[in-house]
Figure (tube, rainbow, N blue to C red):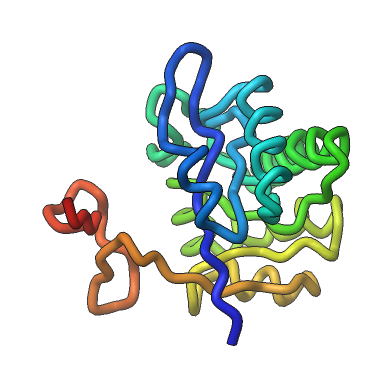
Length: 189
């Protein structure tokens, strides 16, 4: 078994700095780079890709819903075909910047509400899998175990990396505890 230490990065925006990308990048093996829909912007995206390259970190696209104000954590109603286009657009943005910096995109992981929506909805999961497969069938899909996304990615012939969160609490049914609940995010400070 291979353990991949993965983190969401590139979530700063304009003059606002979110996260500790420089410190985190030295400790991870793969990075989910925000594609500027839930967080990030074109300049942050490029700086983040450069930082990942400097540390030998695998680059992944981190598509989210178009929800900067809610940081991509609010559920938005979206049709599967619109979701497919939205995800394809974001994958292409991260892959394009990575290519410009001499790197290749390795994986895709949905962000926030999109992650949960594609975990639970077979139609939305299939739309996301189509977007990924249309762009590049060699991309690995990160998804929670026993989810609609795992099934859809497999059906589309994509490789799946089943993941767990070390900093999040889980409910008895295996789902992540809602961030609004006490103890949902594990913090040792």
